Image (cartoon, rainbow, N blue to C red):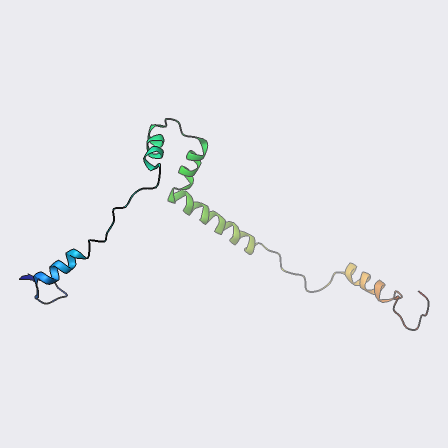
Length: 117
């Protein structure tokens, strides 16, 4: 009989039966195997001497400092755009008023008083 001490559990005796059940539960476990041609790809990558441009680019972009700086730059640009926006004009300009007056006095094709277009 075995005694187990733990901060969570109080002294609890384990019988041989409990230990055997725990060990027998591992019987169905299978050995994991890598994907096909894993070792071939690994050897090819290890023996490759030159790095192409994409390896260099992904190596630089994957750095946390580059990622954090690029996110901060995007946030700063967004803040600059939002803060430097010009306010929307509420009152129309004189040219807008003149154009509206001109269209107001024009004859509509759908005017009921005028029978001809």
